[in-house]
Length: 465
Image (tube, rainbow, N blue to C red; front, side, top):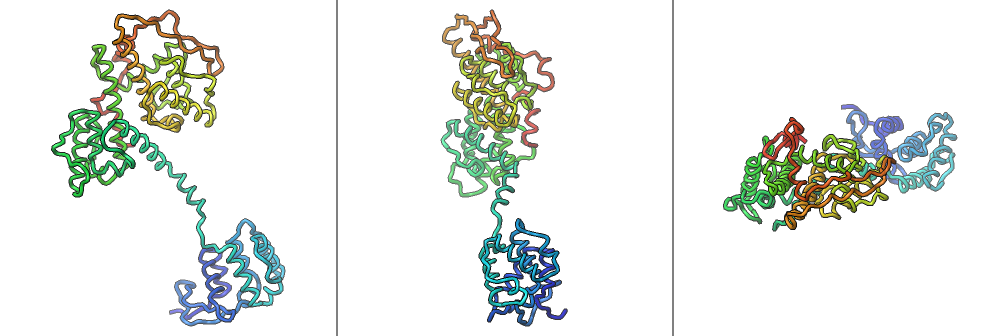
């Protein structure tokens, strides 16, 4: 066993370089556990695990006479006032003076002069160290760093936004349960069963379901297993997903299931509208994409989207033109920006949500979803606009089936890009029911990207994401 060692000046300097926190603990421990202005160190770890088994007196003057210990300490506590000259100088008196100047910048009072450090005045050194400890103890954690670390966790931010969207959507379904915390409130499986039954009526076997409060965990698993079973019947992509994953609160799998359920719900609503025109074909994502592009093109504008993850959608211009196409009087183009900067994009995205909700679209996305071109939420935004437009046409068709209306011209909005104003197609007369019947898409147009509700092609990435 190595011989006992004192807490020497050399060990303090070594700690200051290799581990500042260790240096602080040692210096403050040795300075404040005192008796008659002397340091009494006990069980302080030095070197490679050596202990001080005997208490030895260490006088202030012996440790602090040359001012180096002070220099290391202040450089660790207040690096913003650090000066290399403090350690570079060879004169102890000059170094002591620089130490006191450093301390003054930390709002420490001058209890002593440079010669008091050099000569080793115990009382004044102790008061000086106490003042340093009062101003900067080096033991607190910088809370701002914690906040910055949290801001970097983009995955959690995305999950939080998705959680909000799906929570609002489930609460809008009109089920008896109310969701406050999505992941916690869905663990028992009952609320999921209610949502599934609302989207696909008659699919739930309520005899095999257990209503809250549920004390036995396996009952929760049974509820969630039935949810998974129904999801597979609806052709959801649920590879290696079990009911216990929902009970355990697996966020990614829960969000993936809810996304497929929300998408299925919207496509079923569109399918029901299309069935009114005696066309019972399934609505696909490609149908929605082509409908939106066609609506904008019919107004004479040139904006188009290649897919629901087209980065050009981030400026919001396409959706404002789409909203103007389905309701010409709703968009105030004086409020629309070019969408070139992040601030302009956010203004446009916020205005899109405001306009869509004003005409009656049910939306559960945030402006950031449009700015970042969140593929899932962009699809739901487009589908919601399409559903509202077709619903208006279907209602008008039923109220006056023999009447033929002329499609109003699009608002003569000045082009956001500075081009001349563009009006709607002149002389194009479309019946109210034609918009629904014209939804039939040529098979060649949809190509391999077409995905029906009964297919899992596009749903496969719901779980992988």
